[in-house]
Length: 323
Figure 1: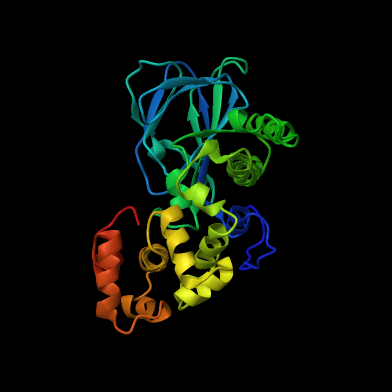
Figure 2: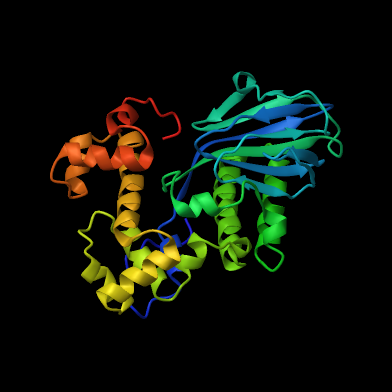
């Protein structure tokens, strides 16, 4: 989504966070164009995937997960990366109701259209909404440090290409030409990628913790290497070599910067990957255990439950809805 996938973690590599973002993907699951008129208020419940909203025509209001209302103008794009619950409305204070997905008209596979009433062109609100799926597990630390809501106009003041992209989305929202919704879906994919890239390039909101650890010139290379190949048999010596330090020096600095030992961090990253393989790809638990280098399915299951909080078999049978 943001760049090519890479597993390069040589000492001369660029910013480790940039290296990690090269493998980040965000795939559209479902998109829809919604033409709204009069008073309306839709509640979007929490979900495992990201939400995306783009506003054309008349603006509307967004109630964020913390309850705060903020106004969205025409040309605003919003990404809710962890799928937190939120509300869109013509004005604050209206009674919310679920979005009437059953009343939508299917345009093509994964794209729908919703007509919420006729209104003059300069009075109606047109929303283009989407559900997007990250290729990262929901427990990935990069997703965890993202804000609940990311707004394009707040992040892209210095992005010269964004106004043109926003203009293109506004134009497509107002057209009834063949393929308009499909084109909007592709533009939304690009816009979401730009929002994330801008957030990273402008300091990640001055995030500390994991972001600070990744941006450490030495520790960041190690973190990027672990995330690129979690299935590798990472020994302290091999990780220390990536940092260019002794084993004791590496272990001490990694633990102090990241807040956990290298072994614990490797285990957590492996379990994040395992959660995707089992929950999303429906891979057998035994095969996942083998891929990650565990001697037995029982040993893997114990590690998985310790990190994720449930047995891998329960995840595979769909008990965990947010997998």
